[in-house]
Image (cartoon, rainbow, N blue to C red):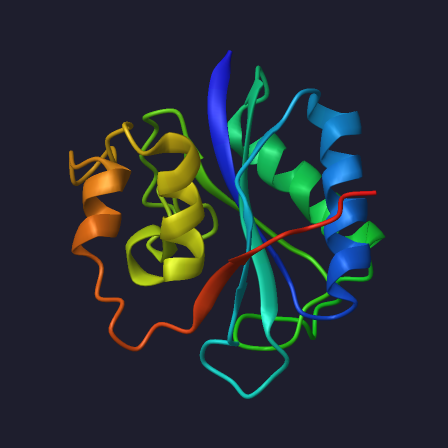
Length: 163
């Protein structure tokens, strides 16, 4: 079994799509570990704020299969081809870590660069996997978060009602 981590976000009917996405992930993969939910401004475009979190689970599926299943869950939650990066999205599920696996494949980049680029990925990841080491940088996610420039950060942990 391999432990995987996903970055999850939504800025269209945010609560509805986060709940549906987590429900679908539980049905597909079983027990999940969830970070807190964070609200952050849209990055790279003008849009409604996002709700983001990181989820973790164990799987025997190879990374390509996990990624394909995530695509299906996104589509089942109204994600369309038009909802690309730097656009509003109903549900965004990104495979950011797959154990210590490293892939340079542009269609399945693992670990995802977003881990060190965006607070909405790094802060919730550090919350649930702070002691783990980034497979390329060999630095803990806690340390990466401590070193992250938060001077212009507009992000806050929120209480989220999963019911």
